[in-house]
Amino acid sequence: MRKFTALGAVIALVAAVLAAQAFASTSVSWKVGTSKTVKIRKGGTVKWIWADGQPHNVKGSGFKSKVVSGKGKSYSHTFRSRGTFKIICQVHPTSMKTTVKVG
Image (cartoon, rainbow, N blue to C red; front, side, top):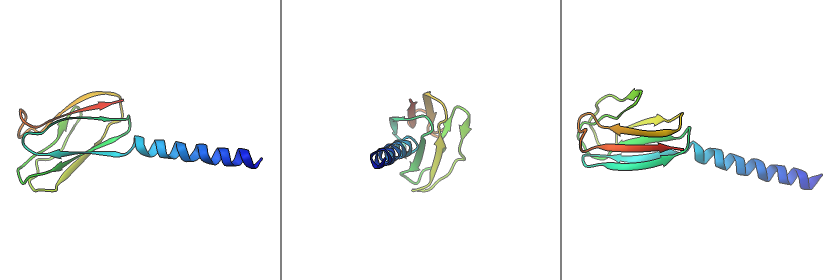
């Protein structure tokens, strides 16, 4: 009986670690000249962090942040469905892009 209890505890621990990884936040340094692809799991979050003092925002399908200036400012979005999502800064749409691949 103790072996089954120990095995159950190990399985629960592994499941908890995998769940935490699935919902972990991935960060993108957001500045002029950013073009990055990130891969996350369904339910994961991407956090864009302003790396310069320029005004930026984050726009994707179905969401948009306000335009904000200031180094260290950030915006996060949780992706609840699988797919490939193109994200831009509307202030710098040709030079600031992120592709988010959600598996």
